[in-house]
Image (cartoon, rainbow, N blue to C red; front, side):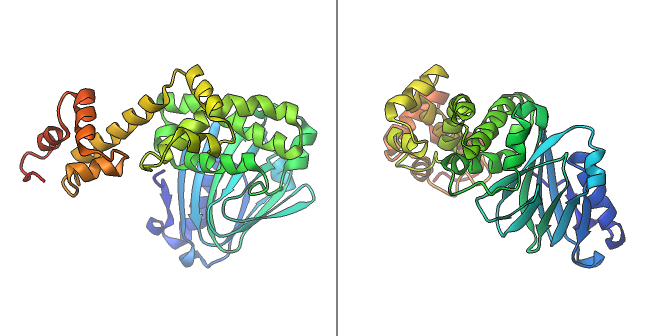
Length: 323
């Protein structure tokens, strides 16, 4: 996600007010206590939405965020914020609990109750705000699960972490049909994490199955360049059998081998046409995306696009010498 606010371009005297207005208008009303002096405040914020889900990706110097009781009482749209810790650490305090978040962990906190979020080491964090009503979870469950670290001890949270961290920074997922497509799976996946952490298996089961196909395809996209990407590896990463993997993808109309091959070819096509298209040989580009046999790669590429990878590259780089 490209930053839409960078205090490097804002006069020091205006930084606190500009950051406050951006956070209040896009996410939630909180008191913001910056630790450094005004001239040393550094904040980069990227903002996005996917349907009713609001997203903020932030890097900043040390800061404390406080959702006071007064601000919580004025809440117009009750929300649950998912906070994803990328690097460093932070502390979340709500409902009588305090949790330390480390890289790879996340926590939720409610807008209808006061909370404090301390970033003593600076901020490298993703904030994802869900309408409370969309989660459709019991009030007691949400109260019990706020300010609880979700991570290594919960296998569903481990699966969800890369999904939510990518959702927050992928511009493609915040636009048009892609944004519409991720809303329901994102809500259901968060439901699955929270209900499994709470120990309510009946509430967790349906969301997990409903989001499985999306999580599988996202995993494949993230590992397209791995030559050892296989059905067995994909199934193991999601704690399911290979048979179940094929069944889930089949229900979504996906043939695993064709799906992987199509996307690998698309990445090769993009690289060959890009500004650095001649930095690698044709064969090296194919190998980079899992095509170990150069002849097979050229055959598949021509079959998909109607011309060889060399012809495609030459078409996009007519003045450069051939590799």
